[in-house]
Length: 101
Image (cartoon, rainbow, N blue to C red; front, side, top):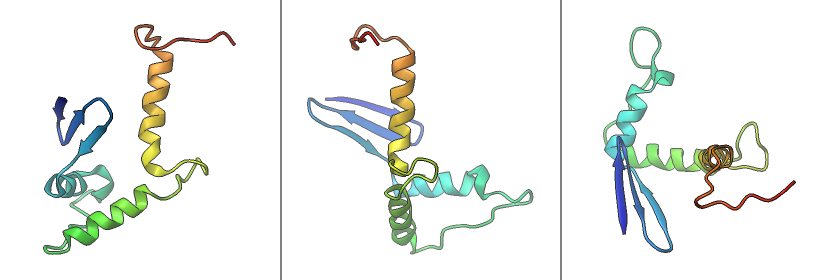
């Protein structure tokens, strides 16, 4: 099994599964420091102590929802779409077989 830790996320890879993990505390920190949560003076909002589970459940539901600009995609799948595009454009011959058009 291979493991990586990059800033907020942990990644684990075995023969059959890619696992991505983030702690609730780290997710809260990301929310609290997000540019989207800044009004020029301070934060728009903070997560209420004891309500972290509800906060994370709402994030999960949003990630499982349809992407706003791609009706056939879910929000969470957009990160993979971005990665796939980068790989295809990057000409990674060591693990991709390109087909003629």
